[in-house]
Length: 331
Image (cartoon, rainbow, N blue to C red; front, side, top):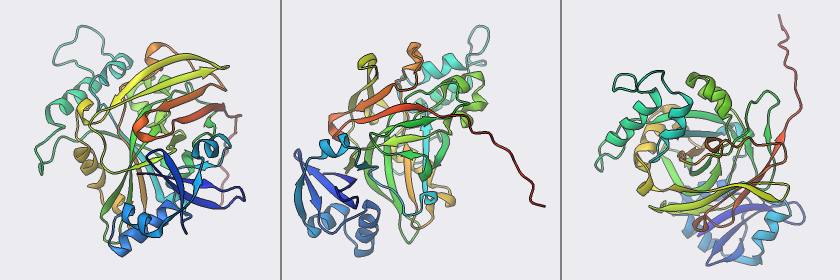
């Protein structure tokens, strides 16, 4: 079962589900977040709660997306209580582009591997521990809160100071924190992590700056475990023509870490186990148009899709006008 959020023709919020290609409205539901918290409070799964609530009218969810009425598949009543975070160098082959960005001068030896290659090797050697054991911690980054999330189909803003506006096709885990501070996983969604790779390439210590951008995920949230093998397509369309297209792989068969290991190293921090919060945690990628020399332009459209996750995620790039910043004293 996949679940999604949208606005009906009157502008009100609503929730729908997709099973076997058929989309229907969930009775009495306006928010996936509130459904999830209700399921926790009632001691049942989200799927069971949706079934018990019952399904109503049939929906054309592709038309809802095309009409601009699709919302992100989860949000929080207070966007500041939704964390967007992620991990990098987690996929087999994901180190090549990063290594090229941060390459050490001279001949590579064990001693002068880039930090990216060292981190990637650590994941290969210790990212998939035995069940119950703790593996090596991955690279981790903070992206923003709910204010940086763009709904599927809407333009992703790129700030005027950005050096690049590049897609990153990823899988995101979706979580809520229950009243006891326990992370509860709802499922997974396609995501465009969207980063500034030119800024990152200047120096790997600029990685934190390069990640502070908007992002998008959805349109559908796939309830249940992550498939072991995911093979989707990422493309960039300019003026109606695809200028770049490439498959992307994910799932644990294609990763150097287990999902459980990545989850542990995120939620081990008390900060990320605050009751009521939502977490959208992105698991990394091995496919970037930037690695193939593509420089995106204002108006380019990103299309990221994988059939197991329902409708594709589509967003245009929108370059923002300069917004001067001046700090005013208050003393």
